[in-house]
Image (cartoon, rainbow, N blue to C red; front, side, top):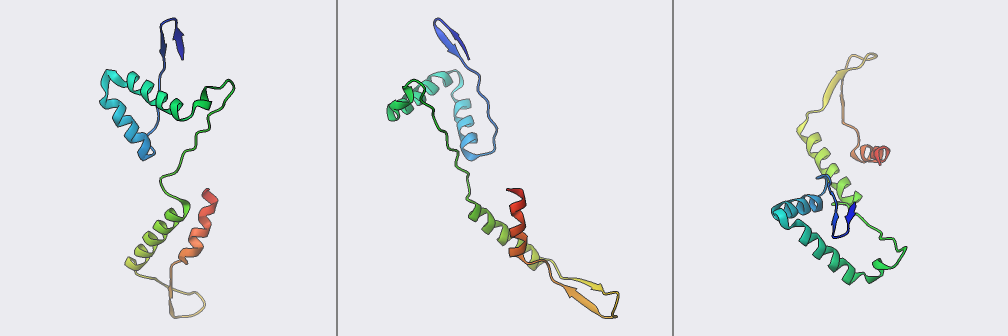
Length: 120
């Protein structure tokens, strides 16, 4: 931030990884040169609702909500995996110790989803 006697100057940027960020970016972009006035009005409304935010030393806690809960993501993944498994024929292979073809079913979907915890 650069503060001059008669004005403030800020530079803002953010990614497009959530719907809220895209919507905010598109709205501000549509405002052209009126972005500053809109930001001032939005912050003034926040202060009106949260007057304690003006207290010295007061920290503002920002909580960013994900677009989907973990349970929703797991349900979507389960559906996608089950659909793909139904579309894909089972793999047939010869075993080395007997001369019969065996069919290998894909891994259990629940077991695959448990392994997702490695990525959280």
